[in-house]
Length: 263
Ligand code: AMP
Image (cartoon, rainbow, N blue to C red; front, side, top):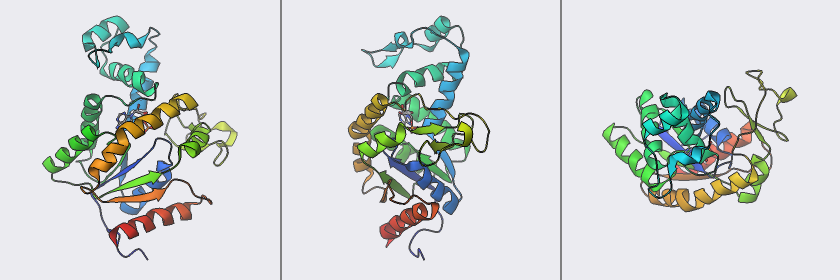
């Protein structure tokens, strides 16, 4: 039925505004191509959890040097918070940005991305939420060339700011496995994750103010990144909004946008 779409891929990028509805489209690609999902947002959230679990209650903005646009040295942070555990310090840095709806600086993000991408030999992955800036895109292009692999296509999930705000403020996630629920469209039974049985939570950055900050970051940094990659990597576009949201409709929309791209 889909004659022109590639049978196999090395890696693909799924991009779009935060909250555009990437996850169901990622699920289609994971299943279709047997890929693993690599989500920088999930990675940052897990480090953020390490920091929160550690329990430092001082003001973390003291560690960000606004003028130099960088964090103070790690040993100074370690001394003040009382631990030099790498996960906790990285969690603190992630929290500073994630909680403001701002992007984590490229240098930190690229380094972290590289180490996770390499865990599975730089292939067979859906890159979710990375790259998000021109600098990250450049880093990725150099990396795939160096590792002799490639990104086959970009799937751009499009949605309007209004729909995203309505959707994300009702979004809940499982703190264990990251499964996404929606209070209206896909409510968790008894407020618990169907797989893990633990209570679902609201992401700390899913308030309207922070969502608006993330949408602004998309306009300022990610839109130019997509324009930059246009012509270098094929881009398929798909709507993040479906009148009738069913697994079949999601799959059909993803596969037909790829079919159109490769026609
Ligand atoms: P997401 O779950 O993809 O919406 O990401 C949540 C938050 O993690 C973002 O708002 C950023 O603060 C941070 N983040 C995730 N991916 C990136 C990235 N590629 N570059 C910079 N910050 C990121």
